[in-house]
Length: 199
Image (cartoon, rainbow, N blue to C red; front, side, top):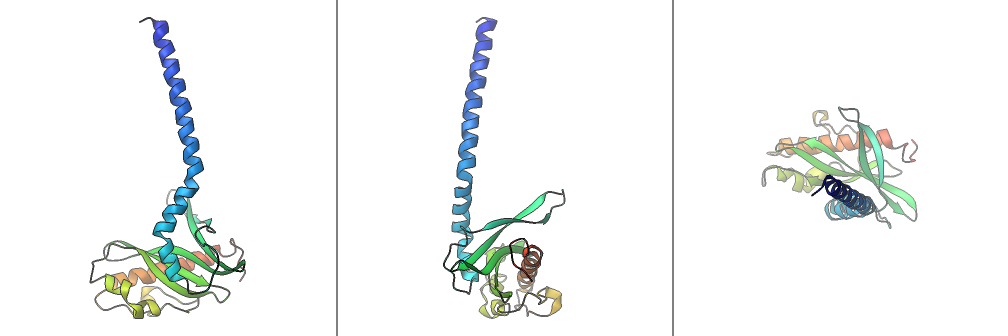
């Protein structure tokens, strides 16, 4: 095989890889929004529905917006999905997910904020690694979850505030949920002007 044949083979392989690599990149870009929608619809949507206590007639997952909520340790933007619930085209609630440290790791909580009252409409745990039967007592307790409902966003939900009573035997999980709700409220306060909600 001559040097010319080797060079031709290299050029053909390079072109082949470039064309197919480009095609795969285009396919990924085109399908990415639909894949994200399906992932959120199957994983997060049940928690969004559970957290929402107001009537709405849209698909909050489809009508979600991405908002920069801060910077990470490397200075990169932290982008969050904000789910908008609407009735007759009017925004009636905003739903977002935040996290707090539980016993087994972070507890993810979807928090709905009703508008225009700016009260917590509902919360639903999305992810956790808590001990079944122990930590999950807080997640499953209607009395515990009910303490957050209809409270204004000016409420201090942080564990040390004493506003919310922890579930006996599931203190770490209770504190994680309280922290997640407080974090969600803080994020909402920070971004509400960006999404067109005036004080």
